[in-house]
Length: 447
Image (cartoon, rainbow, N blue to C red; front, side, top):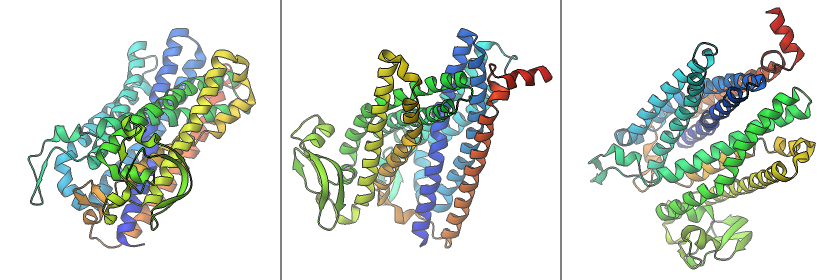
């Protein structure tokens, strides 16, 4: 492994790990706040226990996200000094604001965890809701910085120098809204399905059924918001990519030749040397319509761009197909659940429906990771699109592969610790969180 590949691999691993906790931090507090609101409105103690259980999970994942996010911030400077030297003054504002949002989130989660019976009930609820708002703001601000790499603006590039810097314009670049919208919707979908799947499994195990059923229903509702919103936000993102990064769009679809009425490709194996896709299903004119609302719109192919500016076509295409596949599957599952909720109430307690959600537990995060692969790999060979190539930004320091091995060991260790802590939280539901369980009442009597 040479140093350049090691640096990219380390960054990919770090982003792939951190994005899970970033998305949980954007969405899980809203599930918690919704359960708390239900408790305040109904005075049902199960919702209070559910709120407390989820709040402990939020705290665990918040701490892990803080660690991985801090590591990422150091990696940007250590691995990509050429990038940070020029880009730091331009897109530093969203990172600074993200730090502010992070501290607000940390304060709010502290208030919420230790505010039971100490604050006004609605102020206490607002603290939990504020955890979600600040977490959502953190995610959007980081995405704004990433969007700038895909759509650099807010400066003039003259004779190799970055002048006339406008941080506000850089932050609100042309790509920030489509990316932030799609990322937010994907986070709701992924987190909703993951939480629903865990509680579906526990319902099937016949453990604290009423408690986990209420949790499952809340999580499934959030999952549906994400699943049905994803095609709409994806359409906005795709049109933005078509306008700003036509070469990325061409790689996503393995679209080699420029043509009007371009087909939408499903599946297939791209052959970069021959410039063709084998074994693909082609739906005529649909790609043209998706990017422009015109069935006869001309879509540029990869062969219209210099070969040395092509991203790895196969990786981008497969990642895009994975994202689409799991997105469609989750829409189908959401449709079945919605039909059950309104027309077939008896299905809601059937094992086959619960098993469907259990199987779908990782689907949202698989789609999310695939989507980020499209975003990041599809921008290559550029680290700042059209301005600076990734190879020109990497550190000259040797031995990066050892740093990669070290960081990999840290992330594996963190994963094991998280699994242990969350598993212990689930095991404590009968004793600490479910007031209908005999163990909970025995513990209260003893205390």
